[in-house]
Image (cartoon, protein in one colour):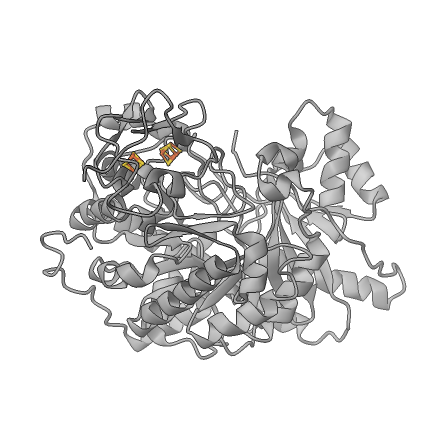
Length: 74
Length: 519
Ligand code: SF4
Ligand code: SF4
């Protein structure tokens, strides 16, 4: 149920932080991280995951396969 | 839109100009600052063009806009805006952008509070510092809170500092009123196209209304917002400059159309910059081998647009967080660490005194040029040629050939001396090349010039330059540039008329690659 940021690719540009509808993104030690328990993959808010759409580096905000895909509670 | 307390209570700066001051302004105007009438005759000090008086006043001391002021005044940029909302093929967000005078994300990032303190510390130490710009590393208007908070803090303590910002224009229409409320008087919009077909080759995507939009659709939205934002700003009396990056084969022909579109919407200056592109920048254009223009291609385009509107030719594409007089980077003195430890007292009085002194120097320079020019008026010739000048600033020939990081290039004709651009050579001297190699590359960069004016020059480069048909000129060391260039040109014409020498037309020159990074 979450996206994650590949920190080796992150430019720390901060663009994703204000776009996240769940405040799941913050700076940590010079890079940005996503709190998996807060991330809803933007489901219920936007058609596209906002961090992916705004990130200037391809394949930097990616699905974290350690978590099952988010299911909107019915 | 973010609102800041106190913003509405700011009264507009006084704009009472006496007729006398207007006359001074008229005389200080460089060709880069004359109006949209297209009469870019530098020799004529009275060429007011159709630029309204308020605009003259705004431009007079701007080190980026006034060709003359940039010898004497300085601007600084603070990197408070890291996020961006579009992607450009000439930009790799990891590095300093060579094209848009903005630092990359590797450059030092500041909070608005740190930035404001830095600005005040620099302004107190360097009285020439009259302009504060926010240009990146991303887009200032994609970071509106940080950008406007910084402006707010500076405006409160130092209202005499002019504020400016550079933007890609996508978010501009949303922020025009906030920009106005901070009394920001210079906005630069980078407009590379007005045709979405062309835009699609420059911009792979934009982030707009929570979506990543690609191709022509993206370029169309971007272009509409840029032009709308430009109109909104000029309607509100905010000075607008347009920057365009010249990309051969993509928008080089099209920029003439861009020039018309932006002029008709009130932009007062159009600055066409060469694409800077190399594989090591990691940009799309760098990697796909897209080349930048040669010096002649750039000049031809600027000349083509000049009939429409005055062109700004003195932009150095300098690094955005450079501190000090243009070209003279003093960043090392003002690291965040040093600034935070400083006790900053903003001293408006000393700054004013210095600026008055500079006014005096500038008037002297204009007078010197005019007296030389009146003698040249008797000469008749169709010869137009370029000369290079080694200068540290103050409008004088005051740099040693071997120390010059860049040369200013003037076009000489019987109409006078017209500034046409800079040639940076510092980058040629890096990267383990030997002395001889660096000399050869400098000569290539100045290949279209008939002479180079220096304060001093060594024997070896003197001989090499002469061999390449570039006459080294030392006799005007520490004199004013334009006056000297005109005097030299008068001699040159006399020698040609008497048959002592014959005029040689020079070839094209290289434009250096890479962002300006002062040592
Ligand atoms: S996918 Fe959406 S919710 Fe998850 S971190 Fe990215 S922006 Fe936030
Ligand atoms: S948008 Fe991408 S590069 Fe920028 S901070 Fe977020 S993850 Fe890092």
